[in-house]
Image 1: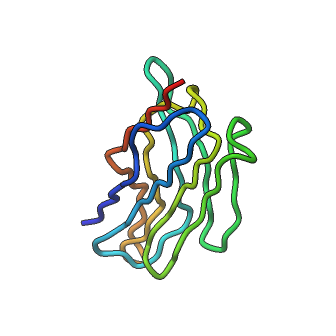
Image 2: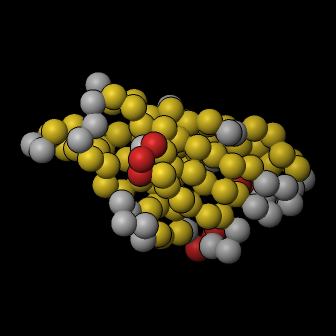
Length: 120
């Protein structure tokens, strides 16, 4: 089985920074795109940032210039560096990864989420 485990959430003041990490473990043949989504209370889950295995990145307009996504392919880990945090960034952040368990078994996996709370 494959698991995604997030870490790094917490409480931070507005203007502060946090770094999230997500490790994929288990029976993994290859990982394609990895990304971060978030869901604020009463809102739909939205894409925050994504990164391909080759390092191409994509960001939501609301976080461009403040957040940076990166990954360590050798460690099956994706990171999200969040700077200049605002109260609107308060949400549960979920890790997502497109993983091939074998050459014929592909699936989209989610972590359980980590809460980020930004106090104003």
